[in-house]
Image (cartoon, rainbow, N blue to C red; front, side):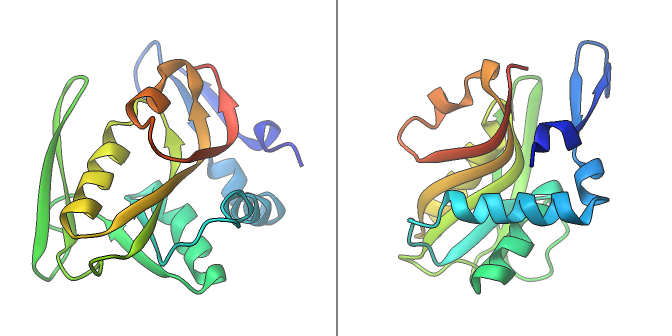
Length: 172
């Protein structure tokens, strides 16, 4: 299946100059969605991991079904104020400002081998922050997987020491 054909591209969203890759067209196609999750799982079939971690919100759409199929734990990384128990809060810089993420402090056991997944790899800022959060909790990130990668933004340079897999690539 050619997943690239299933992704709707919307020019000028959310602002002029951006070419938005809309995965809702994959989600409304059960065959394409199933294929996407299977492809993500197969990309890491040779990697030993205990936990799948994903940032909100679209990372949940990829990570939760992967974890369920693999019988692995799933840990959501959320925006501030969304998690009810004690959290680790992590602030990080983006190209145009800063952001914060949170995770429950008891979500990742020390020594856990963690696979980070998300729908899109662009600049790598968010998943770099996720990696640092996992490491603060004593986990080890063993790879990162993405449904879509924008190769022209060179996020792999930021994450150069990790195994990175993506299913569909666009220049921008």
